[in-house]
Image: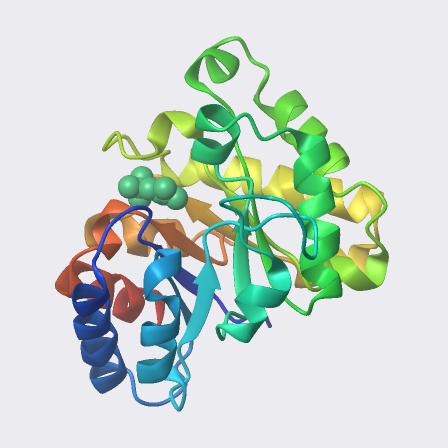
Length: 252
Ligand code: PEP
């Protein structure tokens, strides 16, 4: 039985006091482990302070990005070792904003995934198609390519330690959600691709979460789908009320 993950991606939002206030509310509302794992991805500047608040709670911390090198002359970058040091257990890899705005390629993402695993971090590996790709019928081909390239040389053992996030680019921050059936279709395809590339047993254990304008109103119908194991939430994770509702709905 897969334990769902509800992850908040705060992107470039929240000062340290704002992040700490949110973390305190979250800890109060969810003091014990629930039926879903909660993961918060604050900006780098707030990681340590949020960790201080959440260290004795069941809530996990994620980074939004990392470099694939362990250390070196990479001005402005942060390594996996530094993230572990700051208390992270997860790291988002390959968010479409990183791919599009910062030119991150599948080759770079594959290196990041290998380094993250080596450092003990769980990568949340994001994949998804553009609207143009969907409309031209290329969705499955693109998803398959992103999985093959991003997970190149990953072992069957390591696939268990990776969370996949299907995030159709046309649904991110646009208010357009994939319908539950559209999302389920792609999630099932992702699981079948993992089964073909790795092992059936591993594929049935792989956590595949959905991201793209998730809000309390659509959480229930998305989470009812058999291959959707949680959500990566952007906009609706910035305010405590809607995010707490998303967690509660996903635990029903
Ligand atoms: C995201 O950026 O990962 C995301 C899913 O954003 P939103 O929920 O705002 O669409």
